[in-house]
Length: 106
Image (cartoon, rainbow, N blue to C red; front, side, top):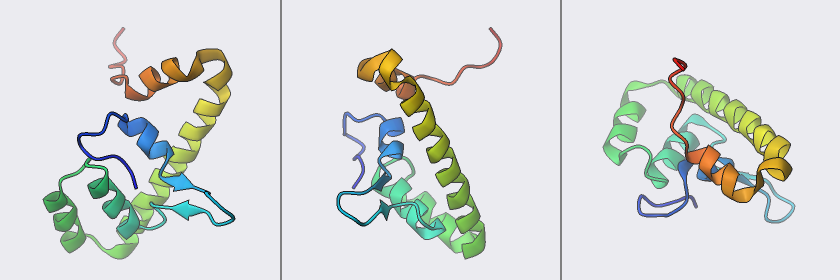
């Protein structure tokens, strides 16, 4: 699952791939707060020590709410990719997924 810290895949694409349906069953690696923490650690976006610290300090329902928000963001992101896939092409989408966020000052 996911990318390793040395993987050439951009984190945005790995986020899109945090849900899959290789057969009749949907696999969602961020289906819960615990799943989200596991996914963040697996893909190397958050150090294992930080994930463990969050596990010790947060309530399960708080983590589940964060996972809910992450899934909503992912669904929005999937919609953006689908909307622009034909006009931008794969290379441009990859650059878009890895672009630094705009500061909004220009």
